[in-house]
Image (cartoon, rainbow, N blue to C red):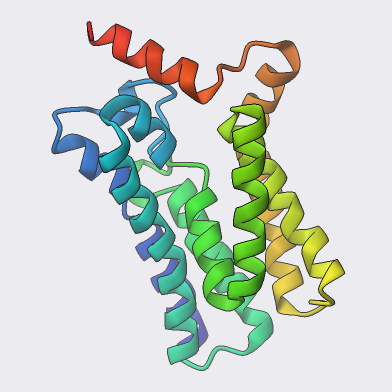
Length: 204
């Protein structure tokens, strides 16, 4: 019963559509702007760095909250993988948005960082460097997620953290499949290009 509650609580908290709520305060329906995604990247394109940072931090905290809840209810370590993935699934397939949502990158980072700050920091570094080099947020997200699996192997994290890293890498890659296809075809806009396109659509 306790385990079931922790899983449901993680999903419900993860499902809170922070990006939608923040964008709405700026008069923006984030699901109808840009990519239609509710995450920080699309909020950045539509509303700027400030709102995007709020969304990123809040979405990250959703993942962290799942870990805190799991620890509070003394969920066995291996079940932490289920709780963590439930939070990300909540963000990706929110019950409050007709089971639509974001891509789960920030929420995934929150779970990893709370469970293992060293691992989380290393994953974040890989993602940021990839974004800076390629200018593709999607590339940074997927490479960062994959690095979590590789880093677990390199750091000898063959436990529940490895299971979580594998599960989250699969989810993030799946949610970015269209971005990867566009990147392969040369149609994926870099982050600076997309910000310019969104501003132009608003007449700025």
